[in-house]
Image 1 (cartoon, rainbow, N blue to C red):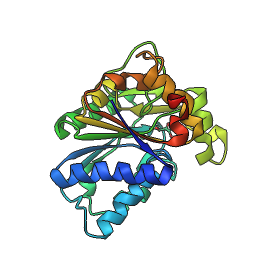
Image 2: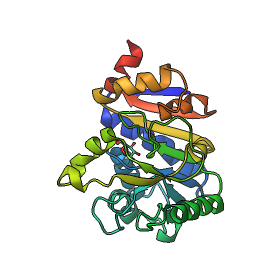
Image 3: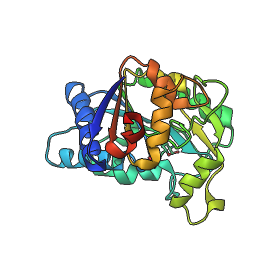
Image 4: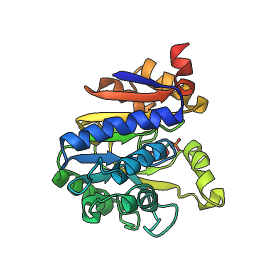
Length: 243
Ligand code: GLP
């Protein structure tokens, strides 16, 4: 694994956008695995400004998102579809028919997950998968568990995750308790994996995930085994790793 250090959130975001820009420039018809959460927001902002300057072209790119809340429809302002739309899709020249997110409105989880796996299979190998990290080490919505799940599956969100995500909803009761997420197997089969991590509140989990043992109890720890895993993190997030 490679660690790229950044001074702060802004520098982390710029560096992550550099990596994604190079993939898109070298392979315009690439498959980008995308993430939500506050960590990649700055990265998307930089990608949008590069597009506006004429330096990036998304017209041939295909995107596959990690996850979606079960039970939220696309129009819900807290759905990951809305998130992607407002931070990236509506601001660049990506073709909507090339953007994929699990269908949170499908109540049959086997159907929703099976369909998403078929979409992922048709899209082909992910050239770059962008990730954040949850405070309990989750990636996508792969919560701590006793095994690594391979394909798309339905998860019950951990209490810690519901608490952390409650800030985006008007009250805790509104946070969905389940989600559909891409599996660890799919994430690990991406050609390159890029994680962004920022802030002192992530320092403990960053150390646990990348200096501790590889275990499904800390899902992100599996990335230590990936051939081309890059962590771009700011000083605060790396503070315990450096200690
Ligand atoms: C959510 C998302 C994850 C994300 C995590 C951390 O649970 N499903 O993909 O990594 O939040 O979010 P943040 O970057 O806001 O800390």
